[in-house]
Length: 191
Ligand SMILES: [Zn+2]
Image (tube, rainbow, N blue to C red):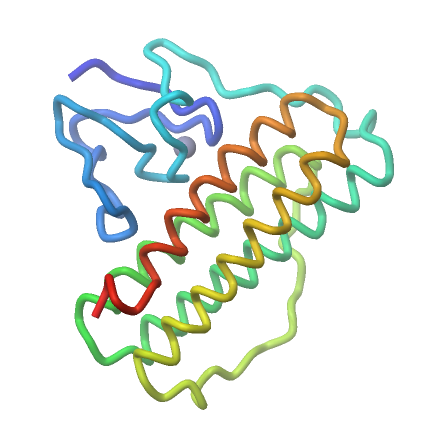
């Protein structure tokens, strides 16, 4: 296969990693047909042969509103990544576990993308959460689905507030990924 670069997360997609995180996607990549970035989930239009990650220039030039939006996006994605990591341990069904593990890695990648945009070098310290009360896979999926809807709302709301066109484009790409996660965590589909 031809190597592709995901311009959203900057990762190279090749014949060794094209099906990484496959449980986190509705349609799987085939070696001859790559639909999504296995790392951040961005769709085909962001995967470019010989491409280069979108550059964000000097984060010091971003206005304070944009920086606040990006800072919150980092927290939102880490919060969700942490949730999926814990949920994958609580879940009983093997398939649900696998889906949560993949989603956890994808959300952490989204946080990494935002950190790069904002020029943040450290992970925020978030409150330690206890999800053990979510004692069935149905509840975990329901909670997951709620988070994904919130994430989509966040990206949609703030993509009209930020002025930087590259950031708008990233928000659009990630919003589509979270849309897919809504479908994936819809109980009817997964269980
Ligand atoms: Zn990517």
